[in-house]
Length: 402
Image (cartoon, rainbow, N blue to C red; front, top):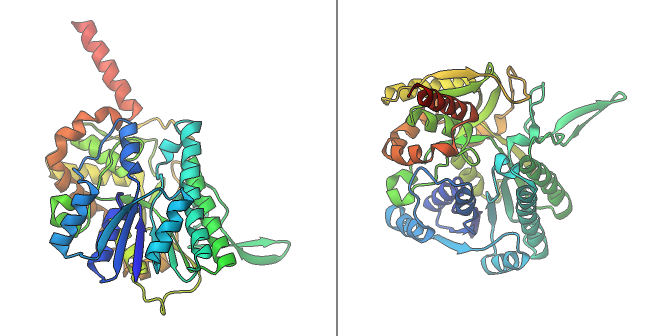
């Protein structure tokens, strides 16, 4: 049997592929075109953690975890010829599709990047599902990480999958309406719809894993050797809000909360995200649902102010002097939105949350303490505008005094 993990050089794809390979004797093939490394370089940033090249990573996996079944192939999923060769040669039983341009801010820079994001993400998914159909591989379990961002921020609890709609006295369950807030999120809304269609038309078993905001520097397997580390982005474009707050604390800046900061966002530790994908990938074909199943890959929603306060408290324990400061909110958003999101199906899959937010933040600080200089060197990539304005004002004031 063969399991393909796309995005196998990425933040989520690499540890997922590593864990899968360490828990099975089936062949595990990583696929990537190294675009994430190029995107981060394009915005002038780097990974805080040192990340090895893919050849070094695979070699280390074989030495440290005895993953003789792990291999890698480079290729672009938007090119149909590559997909055809991939499926012909490897005949996968499962595909874990984590490859994507995953940044909403990057997709919002300009029209070129919006177009690139939409083409890259949706074309790759369409190529894969049509490839499975046309290569007579419709029993292949297709697992894709979409995003909880497809739900937007509705004023009612978010279901794990469809929604019940009532009109003129009649009720029915329908796909949740796309309420994406960026060009990136819209790609995943389209993917979610296309996955439903692929199951309907091709009868491919689909697991649509709607991923929350993932935080963390690694999992047990990646911590076993420095060569196995996954990337940790902290810039405005590719670093999630928790990672940027931690970078601010390490660089000696306050944690910036806009407005009240009581709006809640869905979070999940990297460990719990990888575990769910691993369990789905390794489910016996005779036991997995031959259906289209949606999983809300989230452990719990956390308010921005709670997140900032937790990070500040942990930072103090690690010797960093930081506080939470509130600033006027430049965004048009509900600062008190109490997101509620159902996750029973995913919680059952992983056996419940294994890493609390506080524990996850502690591990991040423990890891990043040795990368302080690198983070400080790129502070212009993650400092929010309100802090940059304050620094400029302080500089002008000092000049006037001198």
